Structures are given as structure tokens and as C-alpha cells.
Image (tube, rainbow, N blue to C red):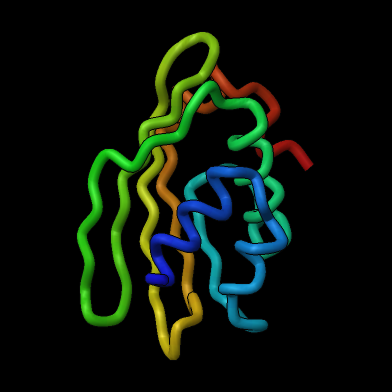
Length: 116
């Protein structure tokens, strides 16, 4: 199975243990939320999204030789939000995860999502 497909299926079905298996021990993580991020915090936020959202759908995907870019539509009880994800992949493992969130919608529709 494709690494990107497995990653998407794992976190959107709220299986952080499966998602964790795809991350290298020194995975680089970055996001535009006003909070520090490491792989544990990233997986916790993805768990919260998967648990709280009415649905998570891949709206677009662009593959490259060494990774992929994905756009997700997040359906929340009070409206939609978007998440853009950039993955770098080497030897069938994810070496980098970069998230760009629709911060206004996230704060409104997923209150406390990234509160520590």
C-alpha cells in the first residue's frame, strides 16, 4: 500500500498508532498554529480532528517523487475548515510533515484544538 494512502487512512480513521509507524524517529514537523509542534503533538491534534470532525475528506492530492501535498476538507459541527499537508517521504517512511491550517476556521469550529 502507498505510504500516503496509509497515512491518510490511519489518521482520519483515528488510528494514531498506525500513523506513528510511518514517521521516522527524527521526523521534522511544522505548522502555522500558535503552539510548538513535535511528532507527539501533531498526532494528538490529528487524533482530536478525527474524533471531533463529522468527516475528513481529501479534496486534492499532488504526488511528487519524494512526497505529496494534500488538501483536506474538515467538516465540523459548526462549519467547514481546510488543512493543507505536505509530506516528505524516504524509504517508505515520512521524514517531514508540514501543516497549514485555516486558523480562523479552526479556532471557531475546533475550539481548544491545539491547546497544550
